[in-house]
Length: 317
Image 1: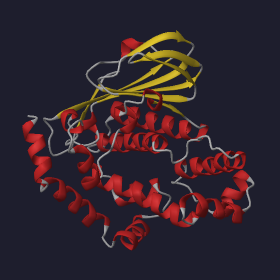
Image 2: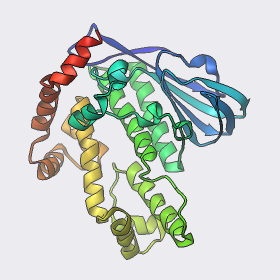
Image 3: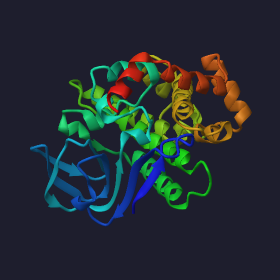
């Protein structure tokens, strides 16, 4: 199925491509060389060659490809596959591929919180193939279904905005896994392996359930880990408390929605586990010192006034 989504409602003549597919088995004919792709494999396995690097991929997993990476299938035992093909401009109109690949892009990410797209752009092929926990897979599948629903139905003026917001959720999950927020890694000491695995299981759950009521008690009920032990894990590995981590993660998610979508306060509140737009406004202002509307307007204005960004975009036209 093929969809075209408007980059923003003020520029109706500028369209950006995003496509979603449900497949019983991975089929390379659904990929293109001129866009980025996410391949989500729920079951089975693949043996592939990505840019001449052999990869064995066991589900559940996501494969992140940019327009330069080539994928060959050596053996295909995959099933229940979903594919998203996209131009980075679907995330933000300023994310032109040539700008993303410029030496200035890292600075633009810092200045404007652009998506780094690290799992797609990395030269480390193994880090383009991302293991997914059951929680991460469930969240990605839910967002995928919501993207497709909004693209298909286009119920109102904001359909592309909502589709983009769910796509942001997927990109954020992949980015966070890539940057090792909650992916298991080996440690030299045996005790560290156990602690790291335990802690990152908790983090996976927290990061994929930000829209729910999360407390130390609810984590205890889920994992049967002593509440004091959970707090100690947060302090040991992240030098913070559970509630500070949760607060900051919810703020980060809300800030992305404000910067890159037109979701209203009520919609954002429901995405980050708050009960109303009023509570969201108080929450956001308590951290940033600004109302959500002011933060959104200043973020857009900051991009418009960035001379380096303006120069890069105009040189690519």
